[in-house]
Length: 462
Image: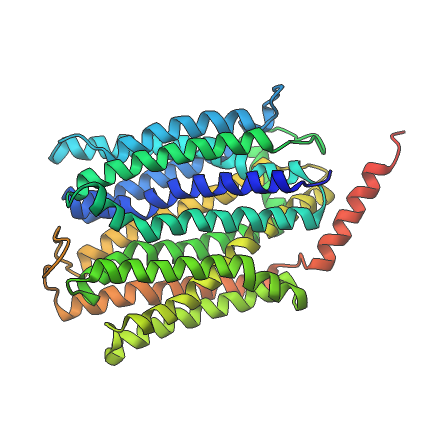
């Protein structure tokens, strides 16, 4: 099954659209409801964690539904389109909250956010599950994973870089109005991108996708030890990333400070987004010429930890207001994360073949549903830690956009810095240790498995 350029491009366009939506929610929901609408940070963090974990537990059920789907349009595309349209409507409702206060706003936020997560799952699992169904060649799957993750990074970077400035412009200084308008624009781009993706990408039936009960499904997953190790790595890596992304806006507003904090935040996220894309598109391909994927993965984990340590050192040495130094240190973290994001998707795709060879079952949707499951679980825990952390360190909220913002105590600033760096370092260290000890899907082993599966398919049935 040859992968065409048009299919690859369309898959990438779909990734841009869906990650624009995800980045807007993941990066700004806490800020929108806590700093702009005035809900308590611990409450917002708790609701976000509950909603994301609840939604994460729905992901395996979505994997089963996809596996059971049979239509003339394919197994994945009907879910991708319906989930996209519903999620676009809910996204707008999330950032266009009515004029409610207190309990009313809390209830509205909880219900709408849960709906957002459920509808996003409807399209996200089918999207990534298509990779093994589009091509059965390991190299093509790797390339499609790189394109998908790279374009997802582009979508995320667009939101990270332009949102605050676009909000200020579209809302004419009113952040609440601005967020509603930017959500409407993002929702429209999202629908257009996924429709284009579904129109161009062709699915192929490369083997029966077995369906099972939830209990049987988890038993099969636990038998696939390589998928489980990859899932653990995704959990820890994304937990570190989301913790930092949730806190960095508070760092620039209350620690970096100054009238131009929004511009500095935008510059930092611009550099970070660019480095993340470069990590995916340039650094990883160059390293892959000489190194295997497992070696690159370990090196990227180490690079990210060094970047976090340098950010902390820069702050404590009195250079926390030097945007150039902060960008250099952040570049290491974001470039490493770009590489890690590509590789975890590659490893998951490889684990599908590994599982089929080991158990005789092909579990695309089940395994890729676990990717979404752990990403959401990680983001939920990270945002809950963010909410509790902001209250524990005594951060005083302030809705001011420019000029002098609420002054914070020295202990609050120190706590903010450590939350943003030390906890991610600990998570990445655990990921490194487990990966080194347990992961065994090297490039040569992946090719060997693919050859064995091709041989089985080519054998005539008796």
